[in-house]
Structures are given as C-alpha cells and as structure tokens.
Length: 365
Image 1 (cartoon, rainbow, N blue to C red):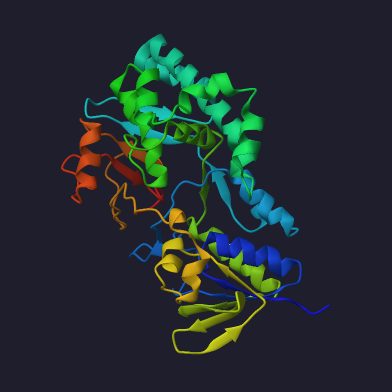
Image 2 (image 1 turned 90 degrees about the vertical axis):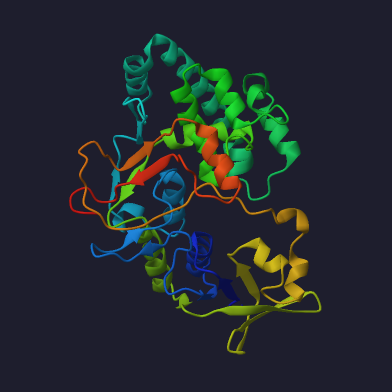
C-alpha cells in the first residue's frame, strides 16, 4: 500500500498534535512553518534571563495532553517536567484584600470564609456546582467531539437541563450570571474574568463560559523551562517518527484543481505535492485569500468572526520586589467594566486589571 503524503501548514499545537499522531501510524509528513520556532501562540521572547513565555501561561486540562502522548505510546512526564501549582491564582484588590484559590474545593471554602464570611462560601458553592455540571454536560458532546451536533448535545444534557438552564438562557452574559450568584463585588470580578481566556469581555460573552472555572479547578501545572517546552517535546517525538519540519518557510498558496487538494506553493514559487493538506492556521487567512484564490472556497463566511481583544501583553525580565507573588497573580481594578470599554474603543485601559505570570521566582524574571 502506497504511503500517503501529508503536508501540515503551521506548527501550532494543533498542527503538532496532528503531525505526531499521523507520523506514528506511518504517514509521510512535512510541516511548513513561517516562523523560526514551533508552538504558534505557545511562543517565547528572548530576555537577559533566557526565554520568557509570551503566549499561554496556564497549563490546564493535563489529561488531554496525557491522552495525546499515550496515543503514540509515550508518557508525557518522560519528556516534560511538570509541577502542579498549589495555588491556581492569587487575587489582589485595591482595598488590600487578597484571595488564593486552589484545586482543593474544601481549601477554597476555608479561604472564602476568611475572605467574605459564610455567605461568600454558600454563593461560591452554588456557582461551583453549576460550573461543574456545565463542564460535565458539554465535555464529551462538544469538547471531545470532533463533529459536535445540536441533536447529540441536547440528548446528552437532558438529565441536567434544569440545573444548567441559568447558564443557557439566550442572551445571558457571563457577567450577568456571575452577578446573580455573588453579592460581593470582588468575587463578581474574579469569576467574570474567565471570559478573557477566549479573548472576550464578560459583559458580551455567553454565560456558558462559566464552565472554565471548573476546568481550571481540575489543576494548573507549571512546565519546567516554560510552556514552549511542550511544543519542543512534540517536535522531538514527531521527528523520531520521521516527520520533517521546515521553519522560516512561508506557504503562499494551497494548490487545488478539480476540487482536489494537490499540495502547496511556497513564497519562493516552489510547489510541493501531497495527498492531503492540514491547515493549522487562522480561518480568516483562507477566507481572505492569503493562501490563494481557490482556498477561499474552503471556508464559509459564518466561520470567520470579527477579531476580539481582551488584553495588552508585555513580556520582559525583571527583578521581583514583592514577596507576595505566586506563579499566577491577578490585580483587579476599581471599576471592572471600564477596562473593557477602553479596550473596545482601541485604547489602553486607564485603570486595567493586571495579570502577572511570575515565570521563575527562583531567580530574576
């Protein structure tokens, strides 16, 4: 049987996961990446203290990556050194109060009782249960389903329909749902912020995003050397299975003729042919013709959304002067909505919430 050839455009995590699994079962794989390193958004910026993560800083849902490694006969912790964080995040407010949340729900009850009394504990208990039910209801039907459908989702969630209904009301935002659960302004800020994980504003994003809290509560891990080490590990394993990587190599066109994929054309004009092409990139690049006129037909307008922006990011090395920092730190502002109004207007917020990832507290960061 002829070995099938696959070209992967883009060495982001999706492209790397596809490459590793296909190479493992015998496909001939070539990966073409515009940049000089793998990982896509999982990128780094050089500093006097070494590479600093400039993309995702929170490693959650570890079991999904465990499954990825296991599908190719590997154990993730043979290739990465992971440390589970005791504190999911440390939260600070202008009034001087501070709250640590962890993956231990009983520890959270204790911390919240000290923070806001028994009322805060009961409000959190109700929100946590809703977030858990949402996650469990949609985990298999959507999060783990390559072809989710409305019919299968409804059938799987009927048992929990009443309990999760508050988060599924049409037009209900995350901020609105959180406001209905918490009387404390500070806790409203904290649990509304999960919309920013997907680049959204809690005042415009759907209430179903409250399930992100439960996903994070399952655990946060620190990757020794930084999150980008995950991408490097996937590349190493794929190369052992004969996958080839071409960095600093821009694809200008996906070649299509007679409604059949033929391969790609590089920026220098070279054409490479294949049986399949996997595009691990922005759907908007296809839709707007950045990969050729024919490729615009591969995606429908409804799958290309307007850009969102939830944060401005600075990445640098610095000396730590505060002894209160942990790995993940959130400094809230006075008027939470003001920062999203400023960002929506294209301005740097006058009074922003600050997220600080102290990547390496053992030495200057």
